[in-house]
Length: 561
Image 1 (tube, rainbow, N blue to C red):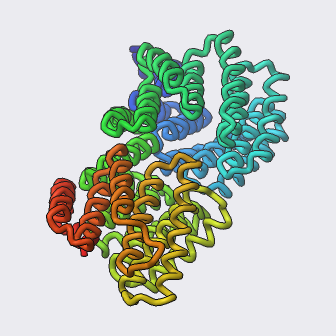
Image 2: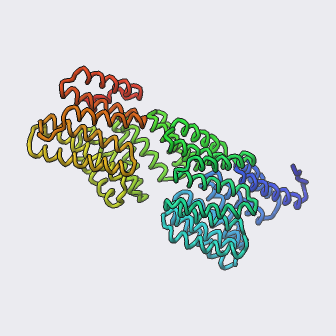
Image 3: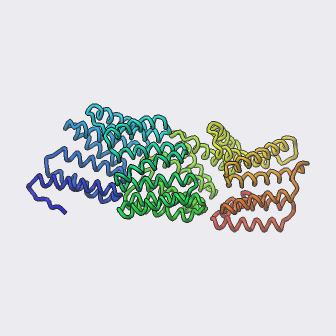
């Protein structure tokens, strides 16, 4: 380590620059904690010399490193400190750099209008001082915000302008980054083949320039797009190539990203236990390097795996951890999706007050952030909650709103989910308000059955296995009601039994214990209806065992009548 020769300012300046350079290297290789230690020492050392430009440069670098550790509030604070010094010095290049950093912080905090404002202010200065490289960087930043907002055409315009400058300046590494971002637009549009073509073009440049870190991150992009195309083996190969590079260079952030993506592969292969293991591994590294943004994603995905495993308490724990970090980051959307997860799990556990509180807060977020798809899912869960509480008018209002959104979005999975929830409500209304045989009940059952067949066909067409199982179970329940009322077109008892068994088999294959137990309960209720009491008790016992293992001791009462 270089020693400071007290009394000689040039030595201190040299020492500061060495620390600053090493901090940048640590940051680039994912060792953010060490980077922060070095740059903070550098800032403190600048107090020994009267060089305000050097102080501002170090504070600006500190601001940039806070971005890597997902500490966006501190990033903004340090950028504003450096900005104040650069303004007093009249250093317009420094001012532009700090404005861009403030833009980065606002982008990370999902405040996109402010991010654009600061990026554009920075860009205006860079145009005045003819800082072409800085201009290209900010054009890329503005394009990134438009990409996040789903404004792909605008994003592409900015990326192309940045690309033209980097080509003119022969900045190959930066050029490869723009090509990657253009690929990312195609990835956002689910055009994974075109995305892969762009990623490979960028990879050619990176191989020539020898930018090992960029190559590794590009392998992650290639892995992700191949995974989306169902090429799990190819995706895994890319992820493992990236992991090898990151391990050799001690790139912890890259390692965490690879483990996170390997978790995604396991999740898509219906191996939630293994997926949770990878996500936890990623979370450990994100915690170590102080990357809160990465940590909240991996923690959230761990919660999802425990939800699939139906370990509700573990799921609640991880959703709560993720939500707490999102609150610290000021990430409203992150808070909302975790509240949705928490509310859903409380609904499964029949803790309706806690479920409604969290779901309602999550719904408010989706309205504020204009996320109608997620909002529709939350409305469906709120509808189901009020069905359980026998508050059918309230349930109907939530489902009607969800139905309107589904029609606007024209998204298959949401449309089917709404349809299934409405059918459940129709059956509940029939059982609670009218058990007598009449034209209205017969007409309603015919409509419900027609809707159930439609939902089954749509779920098959889109390979939505869970929804297939629910649609078949609804067919069985509707036919049970028709049989109960002795309608002429009711299915025979044996055929209804087949429907119940078919739905149970789908849930068994999916390893969804909750829905399997629910199917057993409904089947038991049907068997009781046809006076097969012994078999009914047998299936009720099976359901009870499953619900007890899930910690849901009273759940059978919701289904068995």
